[in-house]
Length: 183
Image 1: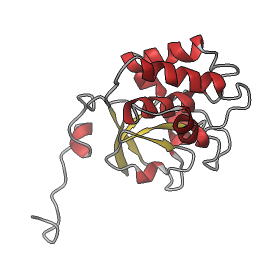
Image 2 (image 1 turned 180 degrees about the vertical axis):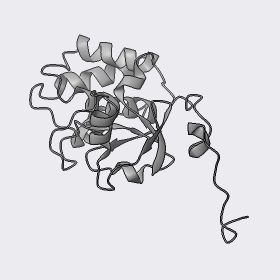
Image 3 (image 1 turned 90 degrees about the horizontal axis):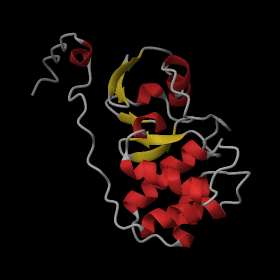
Image 4 (image 1 turned 90 degrees about the vertical axis):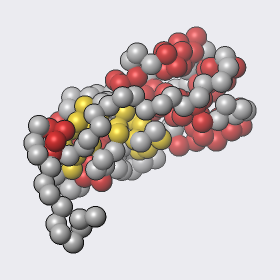
């Protein structure tokens, strides 16, 4: 059993060790904003935020997420910066079919909060792991540049979440540590 949080909610993965995080989120939690494209970590459609950094959920095992804080696009619904980023994607024509959009938004959010002085070349470099077959990237890059131009967007502090991951987070009692592991 692996315990972690998804969008602030404590969850447990009790399935097979080889279950990818993207599959767990979509099939077991019903969170479908995380898209699956290549299943090889190449296209970036499955990009989400794990412990504050973008990761490819199609090559991340759910069982390897013990104690992690996972955020999918669904969790950014009320985030002011993500709201601005989504509006910029719309205003700068960074959307077409929408398949790559969740991964692009997760990566764009990271760029805006981590690289406040990023120029076009750096934005393109950061986006290089996200494929878009529709837009040609110009609108996406323009959208991210527009949000960067709005001013500094420091990485927000982690939201107040369940402080404990493990049995107590699910109403159980934590098991005592074996004598060899006790402090």
